[in-house]
Length: 497
View 1 (cartoon, one colour):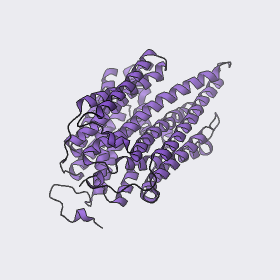
View 2 (cartoon, rainbow, N blue to C red):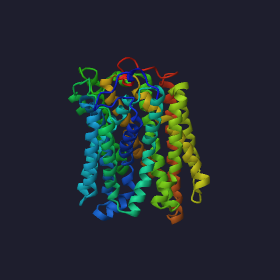
View 3 (cartoon, rainbow, N blue to C red):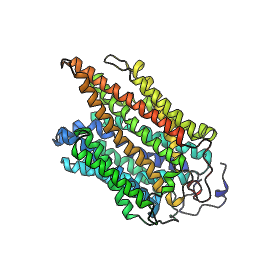
View 4 (cartoon, rainbow, N blue to C red):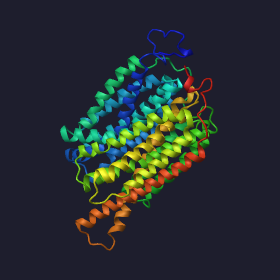
């Protein structure tokens, strides 16, 4: 194996160096943890009807099983990232794994609706500690440019495709076992990742211990909670609802307060130098927009396949696998082959355009559509486009970041994907409901017209999702700097050890 200059010194006993021979197994550990976090945002969706029947909660309460996870995860990510900077990436990663597993066990054993929602919120909180630690550990484990590109490609594919795999796994576990196993399965994931983390991940203590910005932490956590809750509430109660307006307004104000604080405190939670870099800022916005559009595929195409075409949960999950395959191929080839040659701007812009074309292809679906002709091509094209965006964006977002900022920079990537997904789900759900009601105006309420209205609502959301990806193409083309990513300067994440 070819080594770099950092390998000339033997690795001390009990410590794992960046270029040790098992670093690809480390990638497996980090990827497994990331998969667990991402798929848990969707794996419960298919199990919800069974859980609702078992615990006897109402349709109105059902959304809280999903929303509780999103609220805790989205609002605490930046705090989780900074804690990994404070106490060490490996430590917070392992604490996050243990906490996530415990909360999953509590949720699986839930005997009441309140207990299930509390467990889901606990999962989100520990996921907020786990996800940024995993991404920053990836950055310091792979420092050679060629290996780093491959690793980020695989990690980006997992981040993008985990939601689709969650649909498949959720369908299998619900249909073959019980809805509770959609939560219990995390115990197996967490145990494998925990064993791997103990033996494989770098044990070097953090050399940089920035102080925790408590006012900024409180402001941004409350702001993100308000924004995610406001959009979630709009999905069920409408945009004009007083509670919706109040939480969205509070979120905007608190974000302004947070930005003001970050300019004035000595140790900011999110140093503005991180997000004001053009390439990094463009990468964050690209992840946000891709997350917003991606959930249109997962959510509304799932509804279409099950309610219109009559697919079972398992077959629905299998239907998404070509999209995951396209995403993985595009993500790995983008970072390993194209990113070192043409840079992130061309890749991210082209990926957004390809994803938009894939969504436009899905607008052709109807009551009598077939999978091979009307659905499969759009899924593969959309997945390919998203793979071209996710992996280069993740690498661009943390390249050159100072070691003391790596955790919070990584957390910002996850925050953008999570908040983007929450906002996209609420926005497109509202658009779908409006499109359905508008379609029914002047038509007799028969089962046939109701089915046509449902299909119309889905295709409308796909048009909007295509528009979101088109906006993302403009953002990437304008904000991201042309050319290749710069080599990491002395002291940056890519050379942290």
